[in-house]
Every structure is written in structure tokens, then in C-alpha cells.
Length: 64
Image (tube, rainbow, N blue to C red):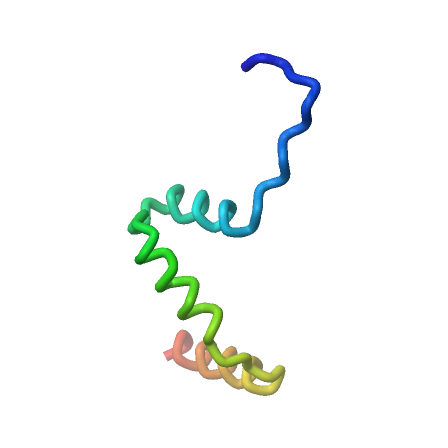
């Protein structure tokens, strides 16, 4: 790799997501990626109490 005095531009968040998806060998099409991001972006936010209840339920299920 040749040395240059110009520092690399920081990667944008979307590029980091794409790299992570490629490493996981997921569907690499842009449409599939955008669909997954949209699902995540529009997911409802849980309150702290809802998170605690979810953890309790998962813990109880794993004990059974």
C-alpha cells in the first residue's frame, strides 16, 4: 500500500453497516440492506421497564 500524506476520510455509518453485513455473509443487495435498516429504524423504542420485563421473560423461558 503506497504511503500518502492525505489521511483517509472517516467512514460513514452506512459504509460501516455494509461492511458488517458483508462480514456476516448476509444478502448484499442494496434493496435487502435498505429493507433491514428501515425495519430497525422504525422499531418501537422500549422503556426501561419494558426492557426489564422482556429480560425477565427470556430468563424464565431459558430456565424451563
